[in-house]
Amino acid sequence: MLNKLLFKHIDCSPLVVFRIIFGLLCFLESVGAIFTGWIKRTMIDPEFTFNFIGFEFLQPLPGNWMYAYYLVMGIFGLGIMLGYKYRLSTLAFTIMWSATYFMQKASYNNHYYLLILLSGIMVFQPANVYASIDAKQNPKIKSLSVPRWTSLVFILQMFIVYTYASIAKIYPDWLDLTVPDLLMQAKKHYYIIGDIIQEKFVHYLIAYGGILYDGLIIPLLLFKPTRKWAFFMSIFFHMFNSIVFQVGIFPYLALGFSVFFFEPKTIQKLFLKKKPFYDEIEVKTPKNYKPILVLVSIYFLIQLALPLRQHVFPDNVLWTEEGHRLSWRMMLRSKTGTVTFTVVDKNNEGKRVVKLSNYLSKKQMRMAATKPDVIWQFAQRLKQEYAEKGMDVSVFVDSKVSVNGRPYQQFTDPEVDIAALPWEVFKHSSWILPSKLDK
Image (cartoon, rainbow, N blue to C red; front, side, top):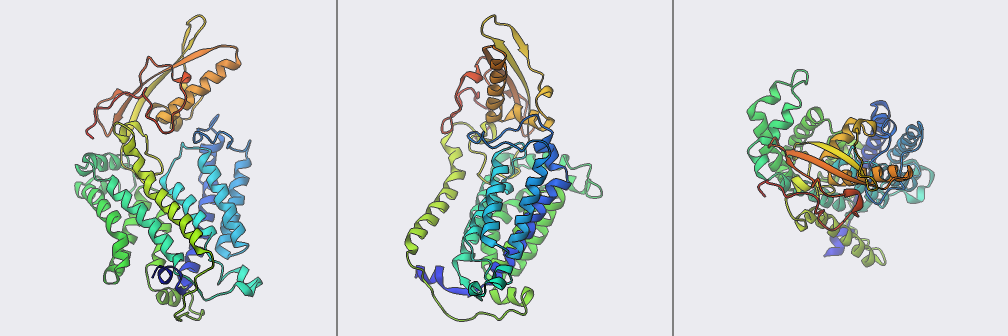
């Protein structure tokens, strides 16, 4: 039964079309970062970047070399799209994109993380068996069909993403429209739609429509009678997100996944009319497939477990941020803060308040007020800087944070020398003071 589910061959049209869409979007994401100024703002202008803890060895290339880096990454995206040196192109893009993701978190985005996962999955996909330069140069790899698992892995991955995104929205500040109100207030200046999206019915649509869409879209696409309506709903949902929230390629990538839900015959007729349709009934079970199944199962178990780790930490994840990343918690809160870093010389107890603008960009300063890992990293950097001057210092941090428009409350313990503490990956940071948020 499992063999038939996973290894029954189906027409390759959905996978081939998705490869073309995916490669094009990888190219646009890479090149777009150059022309929109994202690389300059994020990688070049800041004095230093806040990398993911443990990835300190990943640093932006000096000077303007990050432009070349992204250009090369874009070329690999074109390689994916054209099916040229497909495996190499996909693997290289995955490695390069992952490196840029882990070397900075000032522009953390769930969609960037998703792109790592998807490009990693694409490495193992036989997506170049048709309509590719590889198949033209090497006819031996040409095929009209692929095993069914090639579609199922994407469906399962997106089911996990959407389901956790839906569940995360079911909390008081989202349900009572506090968060949608705050999100839309920040878009008041938008031309034409700025006033429209301030209307209460739009906020209800965002709040409850978001929960229902994320929670139901995969089942609705899988169910044939509702498939077309779900697809049209997806177009509206993702175009709204693209225009209002400006989340890069994700809306178009999400629409691209629709090819795996429609019948392969439909996709073939729409996009690959000259391709013969594969309609044989054939199950090809590869040798030694069980170890592969074990590895794939472990991967998806990790995907299921990562968003749950927030419940291992005490207090509310909205406050502590512990377990927030890699958990599909998308645009769920509005968080602001104020912070003062004070350096104290241990020898003469001389104090100095750090002027953050001498070190950080505006975006980094906002992070240094509200995100514990960034607070800790900046404290470590200050300690290191003063150590290079021959001074042994303590770093005290006085941070006050507001979550979803609530009054500011003390976030960090101002009496704790944060620079003297190790970073605890699997433990709650005790210098984060308890919140007064309703759990």
